Image 1 (spheres, rainbow, N blue to C red):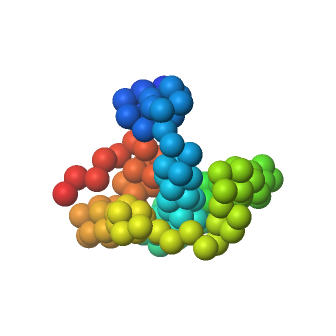
Image 2 (spheres, rainbow, N blue to C red; image 1 turned 60 degrees about the vertical axis):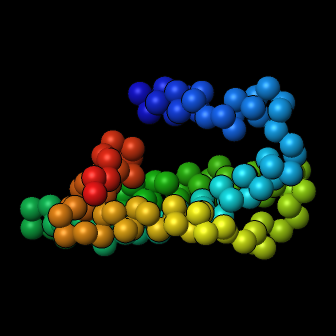
Length: 140
């Protein structure tokens, strides 16, 4: 379900449609994926926020329950060498040092949007976890 949702959203994207058709300039591809890398490098904060916001489950603190998905994600990140693959991809696009990518204000805003939305008292940790899984919208 999530896979088909992602495919549908990509199909609606002008950028990805143009990319598939070869109509995007290499500089634009480099800029877009550089910003994606800048955001993705901060994505782990969203997991940490979910851990902090998690409520207790029974008599147990919520942290261990919320840490399971975070640990699984981090294990996948390390075992699949995703950072290395991303760095290789960026190098092929002409970005020799991803650490030197400067996030644009819109990238910073998006990176902080999850925290702004789910830090409110009317949103629970479970809602934040569901949103992270793509199954709960942020209603303002």
